[in-house]
Amino acid sequence: MKKGIFLLGFAALPAFGGLKFDETLKTVDVGVDSNTVKVDYSFKNEGDSRIAIQRYDAGCTCASAQIKDGKLDYGPGEEGVIRVTFDMTNFSGTVDKPMAIWLQGDPADKPSVRLTTRINIPVLVEIEPKTVTWDVGSSPEPKKITLTMNHSKPIHVKEVSGSNPNFTHELKAVEEGKKYELTITPAGTGEVGIAVFHIETDCAIPRHRTQRVFSVVRKPAATVATPAR
Image (cartoon, rainbow, N blue to C red; front, side, top):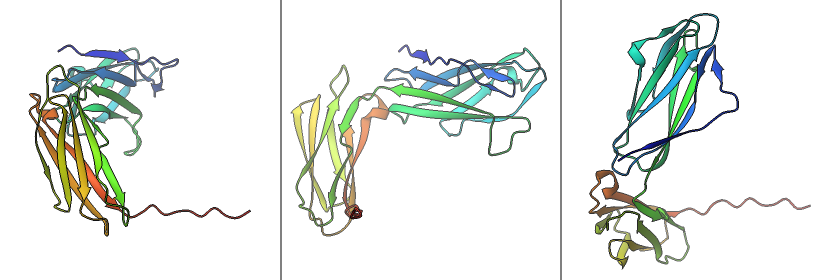
């Protein structure tokens, strides 16, 4: 499937020690079945002296980066491109992926350049909410989670399994292949507890096939008293 890249413009593009990037933030829309994304960031040395790139780090095992021709040293007026490749196999929705670039002389904790790639991946199984909660001591009433399938083809829920027997669940098909309701009920709310529910679907795209939702019995949030006036 084709993917579109929408560049966010800036009134004044930042220069880092004379190294100027065309964009420091890019937004990328990818197809539902895209597993990799390649994004290029162009730059130019607009300073009066040579600039050396000391190192660069995509900051995630799901990402790798390469500079065109492996060139790390740029004289005045010279241009370059850094390409970042992302593995999107395990992601959906909107994710921001950072990229840091250290120029020669940068402290280890202060890279001169920070790039961000914002990747929009279609959500085929929309879940609302993803977590249902009860306060300790509250009524253990059932709570519902809605699953809506946002795909051109039906997506069926095949199985739901929970990690904690103190939470029971019931699945109802509102519209088979299109919409489901998952009702979760705690056996009691006398103490803190948590359960993870794994939802298996027949979605043909692996990263959308398995979903997770959570149910939590938690301590009530502390109430802050308002001082009397």
